[in-house]
Length: 426
Length: 177
Image (cartoon, rainbow over all chains, first blue to last red; front, side):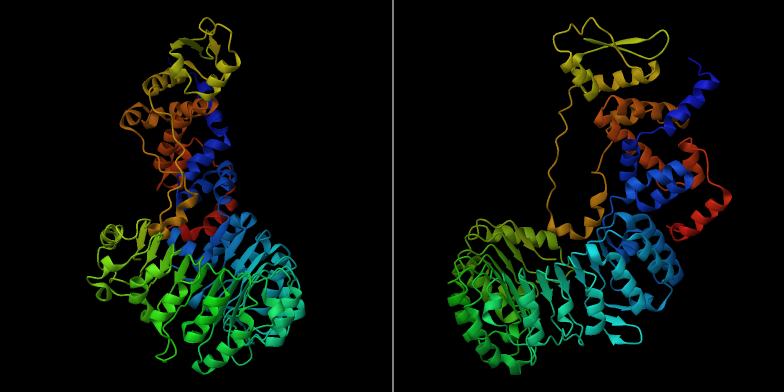
């Protein structure tokens, strides 16, 4: 059968009418560079490529360009072109944008990128701008464009050009736009004292001011305004004490950081008064250098609803905590399912050997807290009836065959930990 | 047995086992809707499919009529491969079986037949055939130049030279990939 000329062009027409589902399927199998090639073939494919771009609703800009587009982001000009091109295409569909950690790029060109973000990213619900040095005016514009829909905002460690670390006054201006904000991460902004507390939206559920000089009085005001507050993350220091008990009883998650050993005793006293008020607390994180025998005693007698406990960090060698007693006392918490002692090496080995005291334990994270030599010949002594996952990152050097070791550990632990599914080594 | 008719004049008809023809969701639904009629006697006209394409479709469904129905795989949770979650927006991995590799009209001069086949598979809703066909086209395009892809897909360059230059500049960063 010979095809006449007319039918040939009919076929081309048929291909031009390629239904969207086919284009979408083909695009689904392609990598980013191939999609960019398709875009350049003709208008139809440029429009069809939207089917690819609109699937990207969560974008971590620097990581994406570095890994997926394998862009050498050392070249500031190319970075600006690439980043702005990407934002132009994905911006209208983005729900979550992470523009953190620009590193040396901070000093390069990024005019097109900043322009594109203002023009295209209008539907953001989640914005992360951490470890950045930014222009004050651009930041204000950004918040007038995106602020209204934002649910989650991270601004850790933020610097403003010619001003230094982010300050209360500018934070107040920015937050005025954010009437629906639920999560606000402000950690490591050492000039933030929260004097702009009147600008905090009452919709907030999560507030993180660790590493800020959050003032106790201001924080109290914020807690009064935000009656849906569930999670509070603070640094315990000179200007921050725990809050009035009546403000704490709704919290389900409390994270307390602190590095000064000198606050240790005061911490315990302050906490003692308030701990009984934390009636709804399900998750508690306390920096290891704030943990004492007294604190553990209070936690294990008052917080019977506690499900997660985390004590990260290497505590200074102070004689205020008996680790074995501490672990035994944790056995009093009937719902304690999740325990994390990341980097807390005094706990590592003993936590494993005494795990049977924690009868509800399902997830244990002892990453960087226990080493291979700590457990030689001891794995058979680990007993935990409900343990499902065990994370021990840093247990062996990364050069070792991780998967094989993990599998053999699971096999070795199974007799005494019948529910165990996974050991995570990396 | 079911009879299918192509859109040619005069129509070419093919007789296919019902089990095979039901790989097409479109026809399966039609047969279910027409339950009670004697479909063995009534040829089904396919206005969007010509004879050579229909022949290929019939070959394919006959070969695959005994395949187990595709299972919707639940997402495998795997913490060990955390770093690969950037690929979440990709279609699931499709492997083209050996028989299909030989079956697909893959010679470059046959590419229009391939596109007609894909369009027919889409019209007839034969998902597994669509999957492997699109995967094949995607693999073919992957790593090629703009001109090559344009030619392969029978596309007309409808950009003005200015637009083309602008577009090229805009994605110049991707050139060296």
